[in-house]
Image 1 (cartoon, rainbow, N blue to C red):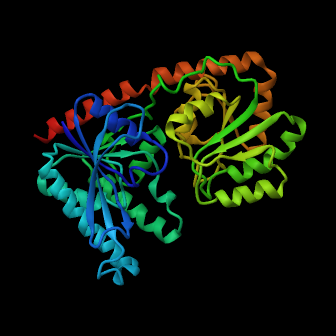
Image 2 (spheres, rainbow, N blue to C red; image 1 turned 90 degrees about the vertical axis):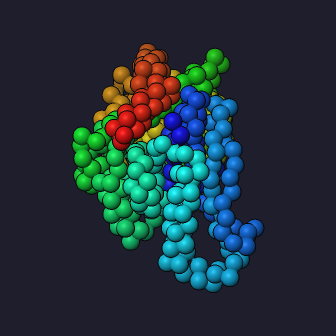
Image 3 (cartoon, rainbow, N blue to C red; image 1 turned 180 degrees about the vertical axis):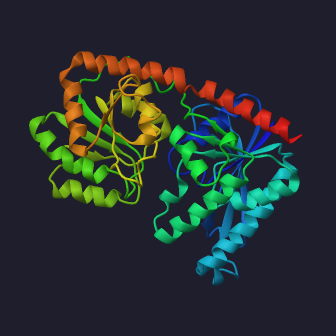
Length: 397
């Protein structure tokens, strides 16, 4: 198959995720995989253009072909682009033409979409015109990732449009499948496709770690629970001074987090490490003692799924997570290597319980690794995706 993948974010930036893993695995299977991302503004070009490159984000060794627009900031139209509406119109028009060109130039058979706001609406129009099947991969509640209420409002309506218009939808979790239906998707068009992970890379280390390092990984969003986690850690560190907390990630509130650490005089206990190369993730996980996933439990967050948990358990690390429906509906407590907490204070109570019970620590470690191997193997999930795309292509004929 010749597969075009649409990305909502710039392909080369941010953490390696579902789309990078599956794109390169499909290429490994012998398919021709092309990707398009939203592009960036640039002073290097006098008029909008597209850079085309071979790129690999994972450890697979397989490269895919990426089309990434460069929008000129020095063109004669740059004055008008100061106004967001003109900037958005230019991007909409350019990506629509670009996708139409790629469909023909690369002889695309099917489109696998990870976008909602930036590329999907115009891509749907072009695909319909060219009778190309459009499969949407849902990995998040996209509108919640936008910072302002007005943007969240418009993106939620775009989500509904994309979900209703797609030929097939692939939900990351049962909760996300329900979310798709709530925005107008037809239930019979939804398949579950779990988060994929290369379990040959994310695996327990042969080296035994003797430190007592707690690890939180992820983007530092305002709606996340990192601030509350740090506040709840103060009393725990007083009781267990040998413990440390590493925060591996970056995001909008990183500076606020660093200031909080200083104000609480936790510089020796809490380290904010920023984003690290994907290839280093197994090292940081294996160098930790217990891993943490922290979110406040409310209507905004309850259906969120944190894929980093799969990375934790695949490395055999006992994991404590706040009890979000989006997570607990997929990962059964204990059996998956995860223990759930209903508050930030209870997160540290659970950490203490695991620390004091070596048998519990060992069983969580073993269960988590086995669960990841059985349910989240990259090869198994990529083969399932391949079969879904082949079936959708057959149905379109």
